[in-house]
Image (cartoon, rainbow, N blue to C red; front, top):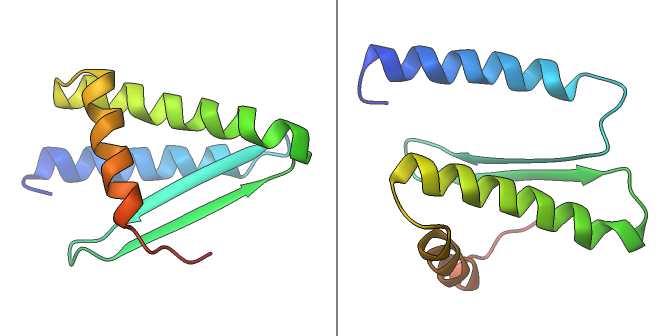
Length: 94
């Protein structure tokens, strides 16, 4: 992060996220990590049946797209298009 304020915000968010995933009512979660050196990791798990998986995944993707568009002053469409292009080139392993 570029300054102390950003680091404090990230630390607070990290603590809130840890609390959120610790509950018994968790149905699905996705965590994507991009490290300072550019290394990428992801964690995806769910307790939904196969028929619900697509719907839950779409909701998670939509939430992330909306937040990123808002924070980057981009449109949802711009973020979605860029994400789709990037996803095609990624070689992520479970």
